[in-house]
Image 1 (cartoon, one colour):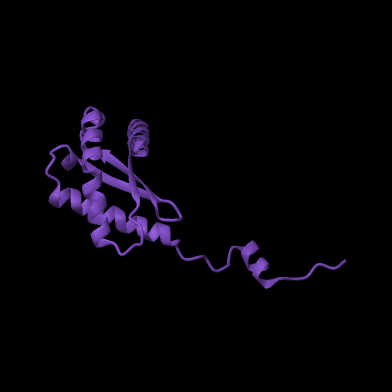
Image 2: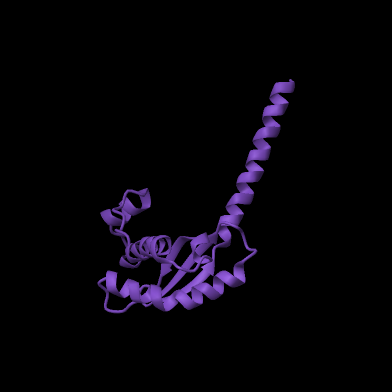
Length: 141
């Protein structure tokens, strides 16, 4: 039995296939991230919310559930206060999104502390230490 040649499969195997445009969920997630970031900077009255930054938003494909990841400038010391403040402000943020986004359903917002940010900082510090050690060894030799 002979196999048929498919140009689309051949292009995909070579990595030259047309890439899919970003999903609607990822585009809407970017808009939500930007809107919430601006909202926190301009209209947040709670001082705990002024010290956080929205790092990323993951949105379900049906656009009903959003995981909003945030980082804090002062680290994890005030995590419980920030979580309480975010819980209180969730309704306000969601109503703001409902007014600004033209969606059938406004996504339910869940806030998560972004631990990747700290991991990246640790790795960057380690890489800086390695670079300093390498420079010292090169200077000494």
